[in-house]
Length: 139
Image 1 (cartoon, rainbow, N blue to C red):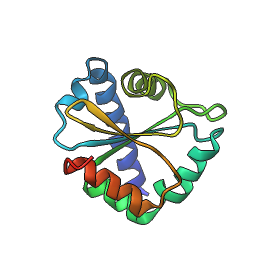
Image 2: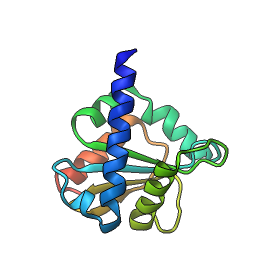
Image 3: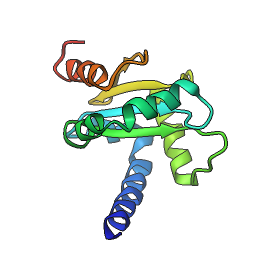
Image 4: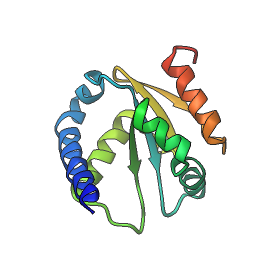
């Protein structure tokens, strides 16, 4: 039970940090780890629901995001309510990396620059390979 409390506190602190630094894009420019940014509409976008079920919840993918890259999911639900800080963070991220509002939208951010990975219902291993190729400069 304590682990959930610690995770919750860390999440709130992280969101607060993102909120303060994202507007000038300095958050991504100063990162030591590259960032995987995924835009979703979790409760209305069918491809987003498949992405979450088949990839984001997959244990191999979760382990990859815990160890190899920083992961941010910017969700834009229609029914589920987000707190004001998360809404503002997601909107700022969308302004920078998804101004056309495409869902789902997968972006690998390195030094403030984003590289898009098209979502085509690929398996977790295929998405991880695409991410690794970008990180190694193989685009």
